[in-house]
Length: 393
Image (cartoon, rainbow, N blue to C red):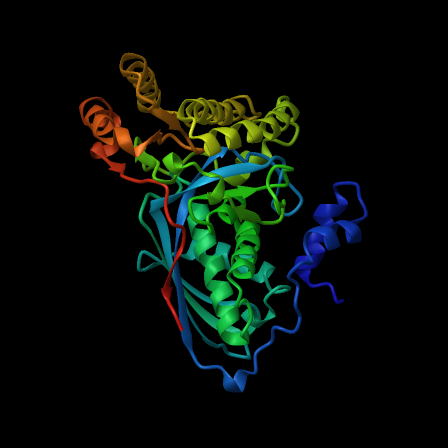
C-alpha cells in the first residue's frame, strides 16, 4: 500500500513510542482505510448533508493522550441536549486542475479563515479513509448554540457533527453504512481523529470511550453507547451550564493534553481514572445520585488540579467559578438536596441534579448564582437523545 503523507505522519508519531511502527499503525489506524472510495465524476450530482450533534459532559475525564488521538484512560460522558453544533455540507465535483482539498467554511454565516485552514488540514488527514474528498468542492456551514472555546467542549459537538455528515455523504455516494451501529461506530472513529471527546457525542444519553473490562465492545479507537447502563433517574438528569465567562480560554485542550506527558502525577491519575469507572457504573446503574455527585466533583477538581500543577501551569477557574462552587456546597449542606457541580476545561460550572428537584435548584440559581454569570446567562440543559440528522436524502 502506498504511504500517503498522512500515513507517514502517523508512522513518525508511532515510531517515537518505541514500538514497531507498522505493527502499531495496523493495530490503530487501518480500520477504515479504503482506496476504493473514488467517485465517477461524470455521475455525481451536487448535494447537501447535515447533522446537529450535541456536546457532552465527561464525568470520568479524558485528559492525556498518545499516538493518534488515543486516550490514556477510559472516560464516560453524559450527552447534552441544548449545547450543540449544527453543520451542513454542500458538495459538488471540484476543479480537477486544483490539488488538495477544495473547501469553503462559514461559521455563523461568516467566512472564518483560521477555522477553514484548520479544517482543511483535518480533511486532508482523512483522505486515506475518504479519498473522494480530493475530488469534491465542499462548502461547510457550522453554528454553535453556545460560546466557542469557553470550556463547554465545542470541539466535541463540532467534530461529531462533521463526522456524521461525512458518514452520511459516504452512504449517499457509495451505498454503504446502511446498518446504524456500523454508521455510528465509523462516525465515532472519525470524530475521535478530530477531537477525542467528540467520539462520545454520537451516542444518545451516555457514551463510553476507552478499553475497560466492564463495558462490552469498548475500544480506544471509538466510543460505544452506554445508555442501557443508566438508571431511570439519570436518563432525565438536568445539566444547567452557568456562563461565568464566554471568553476564549487561555490554553487549548490540545495543549492541555500535551502537558500530561511527563506530568508528575500522570500515572496516579490514569490509574485512578481506571478504578473510578467501576464505581461510576455502579452509581449509574443503581441511581445513586450522591455517589455520582461525589465522583463528578472530584473528577472536575482533579482535572483543574492537573492543569494547575502542570509545567507551565494554567488556572482556568475564575473568582465567580469558585464562589459558585462554595455556594453549591452550602446549599447542599443546608437542604440535603443532591445538587452537584462539574467542570470541563474552562470556568463555566455545570449544575447536575435530578429532574425532581428542578424547582428548588432554579430558585437557588436565580437568587444566588446568576449574579456571578456573564449577563446572568446560563444554558438550560439535560441528558439528551443524541445527534439529529438535519437533511435526509
